[in-house]
Length: 61
Image (cartoon, rainbow, N blue to C red):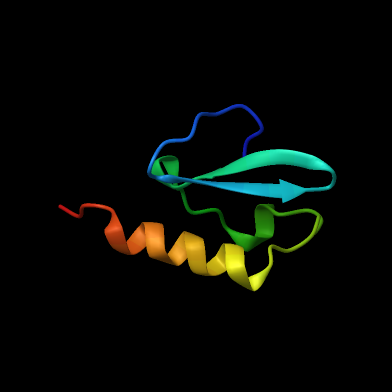
């Protein structure tokens, strides 16, 4: 998630800890669970569904 972005098709707007941010799906990466140090929170089901919908629409090569 980032707080600086624009309303692009591959980005999902989300509110988190009183801030507006973006889930940037066009720059997605994998991260090993061992590198995560603490859990900050979770997104709601509606946001998860929006993320899944955007991923399904993204072109694949």
